[in-house]
Image (cartoon, rainbow, N blue to C red; front, side):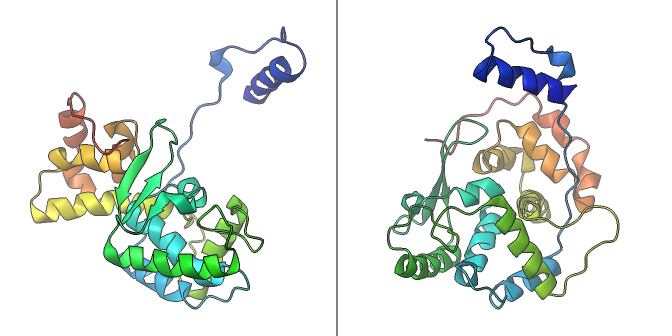
Length: 246
């Protein structure tokens, strides 16, 4: 019925302004996919393989930069795909992520090591496509398609000799974002840092509308579950200042 509801919306926009649209009770619910929990060994093997994966396209030199940016900054796949050349500030060592779900841009600081890899990628891409607008491009210099990102991720994963589970969650590019979230929280817990204090900044950095969205990512970590039970309750009514927005 949700498909019929969407068809009614299409009809109202394109054909008949009086077309009937089914009520919200027929709206499809959001089903979150279960993330594949990458280990440090998986990630190390993946990026070792990314530098040597066979490719006859810009992926030959941009694969490491693309997935490393997702991994180190917790980006959504579409945020990395839509990144413009003008969004990368090599002097300020930051990237500007255009408004996505929250409707706000966010400026993210990037480490020197990651920025160095982005700079190398940019120089190579610029030599091939001097007029390109998007930072990561296809073989024609156009914006990447979602399908090619998944294909390249799988090619690198297999090139690294990493296992694919017969059942359960399968590894995907967006799992770098999951890893970014729970790895930071686990690190803060190990270091004795107050997670309640840091969580709003993690939420702002990842571009979440609220802390609840951040907690969705971190609850998937088995090592975090022991200390997780009270975190959502403590942060549910926190009033925090706006951070990291433009």
